Structures are given as structure tokens and as C-alpha cells.
Length: 161
Ligand code: ADP
Image (cartoon, rainbow, N blue to C red; front, side, top):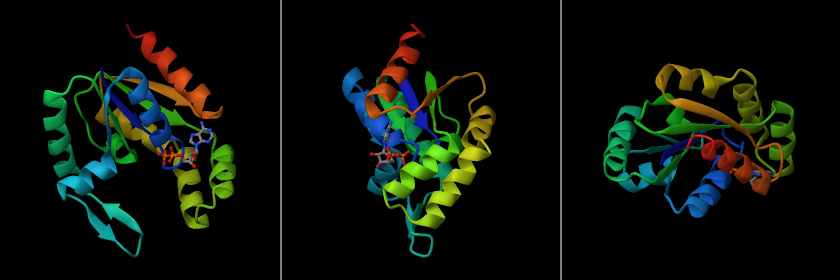
């Protein structure tokens, strides 16, 4: 299955993506690592983040999707680009829980508040509805622990068969 995992930074995409790919014996690709390997990102030291040209990322990822049929692609930028996949998993976490979790992990306050805001306004969901028309979008809550989140994702995917 070609699966995208996306959502606000900090909600638990990477954690779920790795576990899901391992469980399903799928190839796992993190968008940021992929962009870095392909040399299509540029580090913005002021913002302290990788700035990636989305059209280039889309082209490179489309090549991978053309040759791999069992793959988990994971990252927050994926909601911004339409890709040909079987399903999208949107990881969700209530903004207050997201704030608590990220503060406890020692994330910088500015990043925490940016992410809380994005989650609160359904930013990724709105982008997905625009960019992934006709593709099944499933919301998976990460409010439980990591195991519960994986189980919820597996159950949701099982229901597609
Ligand atoms: P993202 O990839 O969305 O930025 P991560 O997977 O890196 O998020 O998770 C952010 C932080 O939250 C990490 O410290 C991770 O260990 C923790 N985390 C992720 N999923 C869960 C979960 N279901 N329950 C509790 N903590 C989680």
C-alpha cells in the first residue's frame, strides 16, 4: 500500500511512520531526510529549519511512488503537495495535549505555539482536502500512547481492504 502520514509538526508522525512501516514491512521515507539526501533542501538558519522547494520534492517523491508499491511516506510538507497514493493518514492531537507534550519534551516555546496554532486551525486537513481530492483521508489520534496510535492506524488501514 502507498501510504502518506502527515500532520502538524510534533503530533507523532515520525513515531507512527517508523512503527507502521516496520509492522507492515513497507519502505519508510521521511520527507526531510529524503530531501536532504536528494540535495533539494536549503537550511534556513534564522528559522532553524529546512526549506524545501515543494515542486521538486513532489517530482522526486513521484518517482519513488512509481517504482515502490509498499511505502510509508511521512512528513508535514506532504499535505502541501498532491501525490498518487492509496491513503493518507492525518495524525491529530488536541492543541492542549500537543502543547503539554511538546513543552514536556523541551521544545522551544515559539515552535510549540506555532504548532499548537496550526493544529487548532486544521491547517494540514485543509491543505489535504485541497491537494488530495478523491483520495481517502483518515484521521488518527495520537492522544493515547505510541502503541495505541499504531493500533488505531492499523485498524483504520485494515478497514480499507
Ligand atoms: P512529528 O514527527 O509529528 O514531528 P514525533 O514522532 O517526532 O512527531 O513525536 C514528537 C514527540 O512526541 C516525540 O518526543 C515522541 O516521542 C512523542 N510522541 C510521539 N507519539 C506519541 C504518542 N502517541 N504518545 C506519547 N508521545 C508521543
